[in-house]
Length: 421
Image (cartoon, rainbow, N blue to C red; front, side, top):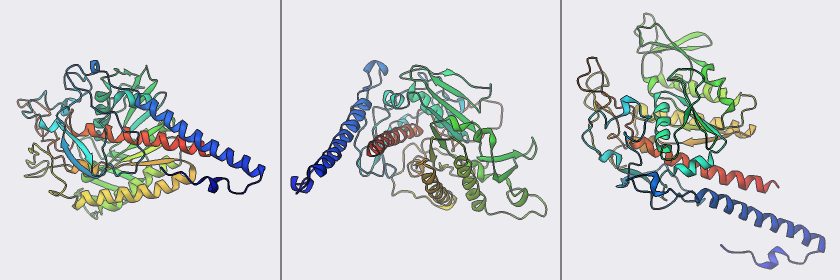
């Protein structure tokens, strides 16, 4: 780092100007000291070897560098030290994502980590995460992939502490967990369409989706949270009747008489616009909103209900596949609506952050349960699952992304606060 020549700082000055410049220099020194202290505090939480049993601790702690780097562009590289928990050490794995329990024969899909092109992405450190989140709360809002994500986080944190169930009701779709030693709460709110929606009837897969109306099952609950992670995607690929201003504006795969087939993309865009508006309209909400982007499925050899499966056992390289079709369009819509929301949020002093996991997950056709989310002899019709993610598995990398973003947010907040002193 080069320092300005002393004459540039002082020059020919009056005593009054000198005092003013001394104050500025003092503030700069305090800023550097405060940020350094905060980073040292974050980095002091090394993982003790006893936290892993026979699992190894990552060799290096997460970087405190504030160097700009696109952590979402990169490749999957081997990580022989993974996984950092197993299906026997973590109690929170949903049955249908418990691939090893249900006989998946290979294990290499668990032994990869995400490597950005321009830097290193540190492996998730549960002690650091809980220290950063001390006294705070985080909500996962969206479909079953949001729940999949939260269960991954619970497993990653299981090396430190087991949370207690503080749910307001006995409903698997709305769970709250508290880490008492850190006064940290995580919750999930199941809302597959993000906006108000309801099934046409109990025997149908058809949903009425009101693309301009808030889903109050979650919008009335989140203003107390410090961090809210939004996601939505796969449910918009099923049968839907779209409503706007209480009127039908189209349908998708609905097979209803005298009904015009609707453009999926219009409805999807309106849903995310409405979702962000619901957050921006909350009174007294001061939290940070993350958009976790669309997670592609990997059905091959047929559709999900026509024998489609996902039997690959290793990741793609980035030059072996690309985002295309509806995956590309849905991701593009999310980015565009996020940009609009972030701009509006800035005016209100609200933070919006992009957890852009789409490209990384596009490269992981090997990470789904496929047929290993249930026992082969179960007497029921079950389809191969190429949507959700095995635990342990690639979805654990979302913890790596999230922790790095939280660290950078902490550094920026400290810097901003100091500059306003």
